[in-house]
Length: 305
Image 1 (cartoon, rainbow, N blue to C red):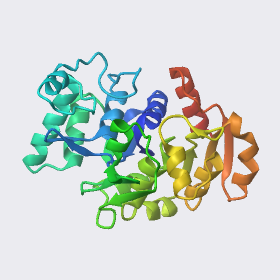
Image 2: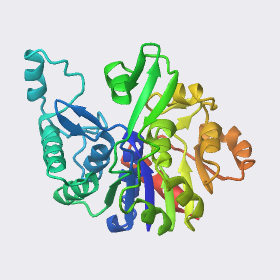
Image 3: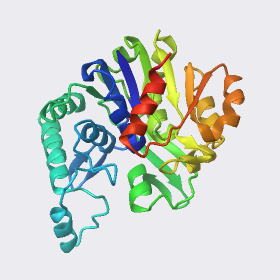
Image 4: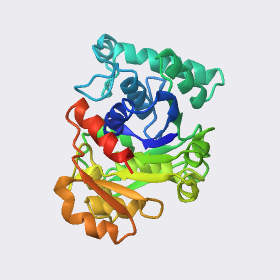
């Protein structure tokens, strides 16, 4: 059994490779919900949907999110009505959010709804939201605190990051199946996601970090930083503002209390000994996933003894 901690496009791309070499039913993916946001009265779960669409083979590969071949007529009409429609919700994608929102109103949990969406999409992999409780990632800027998606999408991550807030972290409980997935796994993979707003959110949920320390599984992380830069997104700004080095070493240090092995890119070979000094084994390989072959190759390196 394999458990993965995931959030964002990088994680989904890695999982696309991993799912080619393991049985779907042997994989559980614990997904960040700190990015969840209400838009136009709809509950949107960006990271959950990216993972689901990717594993179902319907994601828009060019963007890394949304549904392949989707149209945006609803969004365009909202703009005609004067809405500031800054978040790209496609027409087919909207159906997912409508279904999720109506189901939440009927009293179903995010876990139950995600299970049903996965079933409809033909997935055997368990996609587990990290929590069913309110949890919101906010970014402190010179103009105040804003939701992460507003910072990242609407404002294009241009603001200086003064701090990160996890609203609800002190009361959020792990969703059913989350801790069991970690404790029952043979391998736990920390995907190449933003270490602050995709992985640290999951780690902030009660019991998750402790489960990673207690599990008998091999815990293997993959660096999302290559040659001092994130593959995608504002991880560099966030690491820097929290006092972490923007490097593979900086991410490894963030995870070092539960990590057994860390996979870094060939461009970061010079960091190998520093990371090993943290008590973490290191594998060096190509971590930049430009093709399905790259994704599969990286997954094979992660799983090999």
